[in-house]
Image 1 (cartoon, rainbow, N blue to C red):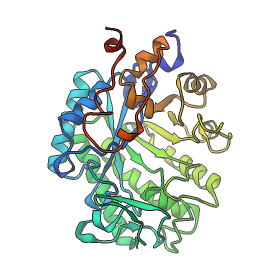
Image 2 (cartoon, one colour):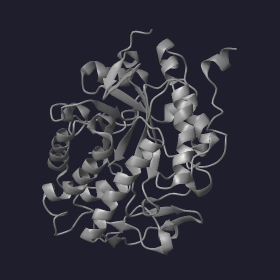
Image 3 (spheres, helix red, strand yellow):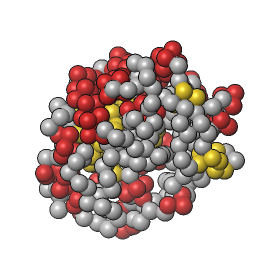
Length: 363
C-alpha cells in the first residue's frame, strides 16, 4: 500500500519534502573527541536520509548547555567541521537535515560544567532524580538562578549556535524548548519562580522562548526554524499549574515568526490514548503553520493523525533507530526491526549503524 498520506509530499518552509515521515531528534551519546561528530555519525544519519526530514540529535549551544556525556556541540570550529561530514553525506544521499539547538539548564551536573560550576536555571530549584555523568549517575544539584545579564548571554549563545549550524551546512534548525530543558524551565511555573521580567506572568515566562526564537530567526529567517514544545510532558521533573494557558499563549506568540513548523511532543500514543487537551489537534486552531506530531506512533496511528488533519508530519524515534529505511517499510507495510534499548545511549557501531534494511534482509 503506497497511498498513505504519510508518504505524500509536503511543503515545509522552502523545502518540498518527499514524505511526511520525520526522523525525530534522538540523543545517542556517540560524539567523538571534543564532542565533535565523526564519520560514524555521518553514516548513521546517511542511512536514514530517506526521511522526509531528519532532525538531528540535540546539540548543546555552549559548554554550559551540556547535560549528558558524549553529546555533540555546535559551539566550536571543530564541531562545525564534524557536522559538515554529516550534512554533506546526508545531502549527497538526497536527504534534508535540521540541527536541534539545546541548552539543558538544570538537567546537568557540576562535573559536566566549565570550571565545575553549578548548572543554571531560571530559579534555584533542584529537579528530582539523578544526573548522568562520566562517573555514573549522581544526584541533581540545586542550580544557580540566572541573573538577567546572564540570560542575555545565553540568548546570544543561541544566535551564535544558529550561525554555526548554517556554516555546517544544515537546512535549518529546531529550537529545543521541550522535555524539561532550559527553555521549558522558563515556561513553566514549577521551575520558574522569578519575580522579574522573566517570571510571574505567562507573558514573562514566555519571554525567554521568544527572545531565543527571535535571535535564531535573525540568522535563518523564520521559514527554516522549528520549535519543539512538550505541553503535557513530565520528563525531567516538569509540572505546571497553567499548562493550557501557558502553551496556548506561547504557540500563538510564535506565529509572528512565520516558522517552518511547530513540533509537539504528545503523550505516548502506544501507552495511553492521548486526551484531546494540549495535543496537536488542540493547537491546530492556534498555530498558523505546519505541525509535526511525535508520540510513539506506528505506521497506522501516525497516518490517522494526518488523515484527521491534526498534524502535517509525524516524527518517529525508536522505529527510526532500528529501521533506517522506515519510509520504504511503511510503503510496503513490511515488518519492522525490533530495537535494542541497551544500545540507545552510548557505545559503538552496535545498535547504531548495523540495523538491516529491507534490501539486506531479502537479499
